[in-house]
Image 1: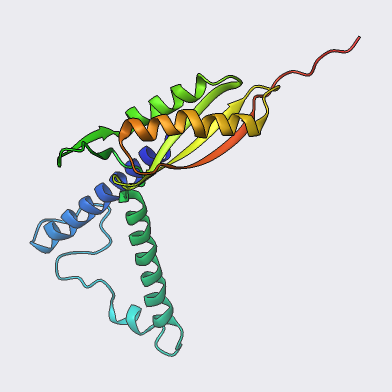
Image 2: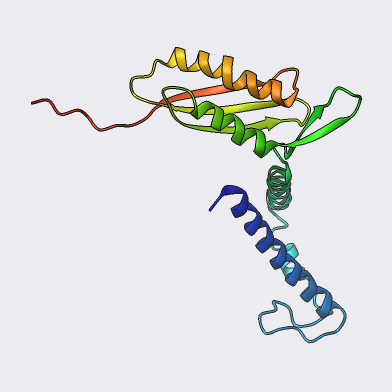
Length: 193
């Protein structure tokens, strides 16, 4: 399962649990009979009884620890929420058409075109391209899988002068920075007789 889908499913389950718990608290507070799993006896029952509140009164560390732990838990939940909701990849790229207007190009279309261009090179077995950054200044993260007899310097030079330049010019971008990772294709060892 993809990481983004897993985060959304987990976030939906936590949200559903909190929604059910909040609705139950509201219903019991308004006078509905509490469910069998409810921890309190009725709507006038308090969250912490007097004995529970004063049990740790003599220890100076208890309440600051509880409040600090809850604050850390809240900060971690907010951090997780912002990382899940933040989009790292642009969905579209803004292109200047030259007549004062602009057009939108789907980022996935540019990614697939750049990958197909890279695979057309001699010695490149497979290419993966991911665009990151903003819609006005995207950056490409490229992974090239090279055949075993391909020189990495030649493959990198070919990619930057042909495929990357072609993609930049086709999209009408002023610049298209790229981070290129080269990896050799795994192959079986040759048999010597």
